[in-house]
Amino acid sequence: MSTLKSVNVDGEVKRLTVPDIRARKRRNGAAPLVCLTAYTVITARLLDVHTDLLLVGDSLGMVLYGLDTTVGVTLDMMIAHGQAVMRGAKRSCVIVDMPFGSYQESPEVAFRNAARIMKEVGCAGVKIEGGAEMASTVTFLTKRGIPVLGHVGLMPQQVNIAGGFKTRGRSQDDAQSIVDDAKILAKAGVFGLVVEGVLEPVARRITDDVDVPTIGIGGSPVCDGQILVTEDMVGLFNDFKPKFVKRYMDLGGGIAEAARLYADDVKSGAFPGPEHCFGMKEQQHNDD
Ligand code: KIV
Image (cartoon, rainbow, N blue to C red):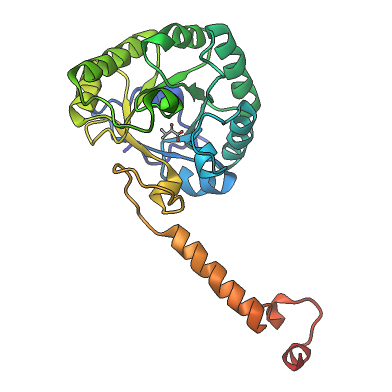
């Protein structure tokens, strides 16, 4: 199973590469790709042993910074969080999202910004949203040493055009245009495709028609792998819950409960106890 750690001859954990990810097509017998988002060193450390790919997603704008959309995310934010994730992840292939405005203008601008991410973060590649209009940029980047993960279907950076975060592929025309986009991007050189918020038949057609792995988020189990926003998966981001999210725990509830117990202890004097203090006799503390 490819989710097991790969180890080199010296017994060191080997990081998964872009070609390793690109080879993970289930129809060729590969195991499904396990992918999650990570924005911090601590989550990267916790997730790394279980994941093939960690995405430093621009969803961090909404999840960590409380923005309404991902449009306000900057290159500096992505680089700072990418660096933190690289410090925590030893095995997973780390990919960083290019934020809105950093790649749409021209292939040259995209290259300059993607090269900055690659140099300053040390990640394996970048992800960009978009369809056929991004094909020349994908080819420009990949031919110059920058692996690109595509992202089709529901594209959060298009929220102002779409008028919200809406499921895609409901009409025949829309479904066809998403499938066409996916095929064009695969031909242009992406090593994989995130397929977000589309009807199952659309994800199925893309997965059948392209040679690179598809990574679904609201793309159904037909995809070659799955990704979720970690804070959604652990119940830490509760502003809204898309239908495609499965919550595995209520970490937010756990943190709130811990804070309540701590506040009670501080108010009652139960914390800090003598075991948390320096140079203090137990008796003195009890006398206070
Ligand atoms: O920004 C992000 O976290 C993403 C995932 C939802 C795929 O693009």
